[in-house]
Length: 424
Image (tube, rainbow, N blue to C red):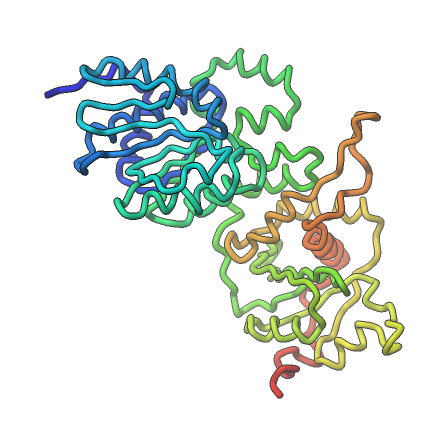
């Protein structure tokens, strides 16, 4: 029996159907009015008819049950309604197909109510608005016993679970990662995009139509520069080259986090090969971390407050570090805004290791100024949150390199790898 669904996909949608049929997991990042809901419903519908297992179960999930009904229910009735023998259950937002398959519309606002179901396939729409526990605690186990698939679709809303899923999809073979920007798809007319651009802020437009991961963070300080670095392919795999020494750049915390960037200067380019951050640890811990990395080190660079003497010992942290075999160079002190500007100017020269620097890159993308609605302007001082330590260390990196630190320096008098405070 031949079943014809009244659906004519656009070329991009048709190609996406074909690519997704060869993968178990997929992350589809698309601009507004791409047609993702229509695509998702028809992808589920075809899979439900083609499934060879008994009593197939498929689901379309939105952030809320009401949203699933408003967005997808009419589409499901439109496309599945052409199938003879199909039954719709309005109160349950459920469609029963004549082959025994069932398609349900679900909301993510109450994950516990979904426990115990099994699924052969699921599309999670607008994942960025869902609780992060929904997939790992509910949907992923529901797919396990029958080897089901899952597709995550939506528009970016910052550095959240959707972003992490996209990063994972980019690095694993069994995942599909796809990005569809309005400037590239040709779905929306140029004059409509231009009209939208005039009525929206640059960040709003970049998020909704150009699928920017950082544009929606109001006041993002390094968002634009990092977006350009990613688009240019400079956030990639950057392996350690033993020919060049590794310089480290620190933001030292006492009862707070300490962040360290690891760089190699190769001509005019600076390779950012690693990042490390920890909280509540003393200098011996970080000496051990450096030893375990196994790099050949050049200079170790820290801010001016490393010279401050502690009340208990009367020694500065620079002196304590020296006793542990770590010789710090003090980065020149500059006003905050000058340091931020230096960092922004440096980013076009940087190549970041996508995996080893992921935590640091996430922090740089999050680093932002708060918006004052009363004055309708951003505050001068960046918000102090979890991203501040990595951002401060990054600023010291930029200032230090601008002042000639860490480039072409002679080897340290005392090598960190000669001393292991945990050896005993």
